[in-house]
Length: 109
Image (cartoon, rainbow, N blue to C red):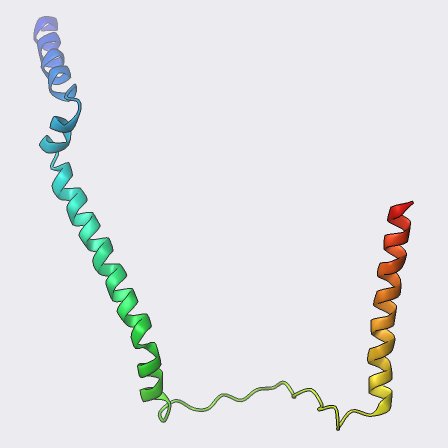
C-alpha cells in the first residue's frame, strides 16, 4: 500500500513540475491570454465609442429631458453691488494680506 502511494505521488510530482513555455502551452495559457486581451480591447473600444457619441446623444435627448433649475443665485454684477459690498470685499482682502504678512514676519525671525 505504501509503495503504491509513493508511486502515485511520484507520478503526480512529475506531471506538475513542468516549467517554462511548455507549462503555459499545456494549460492553454496562450489562448486564455489572447481571449482576455481581446475582451479588454473590445471593452475599451465600446467605451471610446460611447464617449464619442455622448454629445450627439445629449443633443438628441435635449428636447425630451426637462431643463435643470439652479437653486443658487448668480452673484451681483458690479453695477448691482452697493459701495458697502465693495468695502467689505476690500476689508476682507486687506485682512488676509495682513495675516499672511504677519506669518511671514514671524517665520523669518
